[in-house]
Length: 216
Image (cartoon, rainbow, N blue to C red):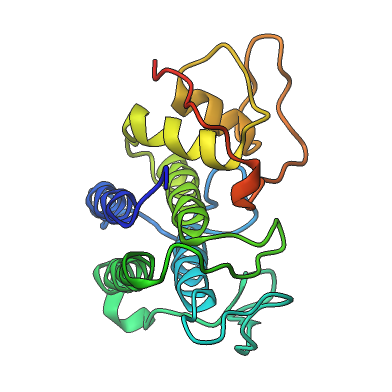
């Protein structure tokens, strides 16, 4: 397993710490290049982490579709979620929701058997795959929100390297792992590589490479 429960925990811990620095900012501004605002984007991230955790149902993992929770947007144009934060709790409450959703995924990745597989639209994945998905969602959506709030965010290069190897084995660009991950997820251009207008990862464990690229 290239990406572990501890990696998810670290990514979410760093995310909450970084976003806490912008707690007094205007969270109604757009999150980077997204159409959602910063609050909606963190709710979406929390919902992603929750959904990945629930897909890893040990006794009856779904192999053809997602768990049928009810999803709906809070407001027109917002993301369709199951998980929402109480607006009256402010940004501190929103970040507690993010932390709790991350903890659910950490717990599931730690406890399910290594041969368990569960459905995702980008490929039936194992626990390490869902851990990697949770880390990527966290790293890039915090990037989006940090752009909107005007705060700094740069995750560990070795963590970026592992999720690139696990989910994006086709991405081979001359850049450090964080910049490569931003390019892989359509956030930025690189020299000789225009910004991607569409992208997806490879969730199946059969798609991962054995050796990770060297961290820059």
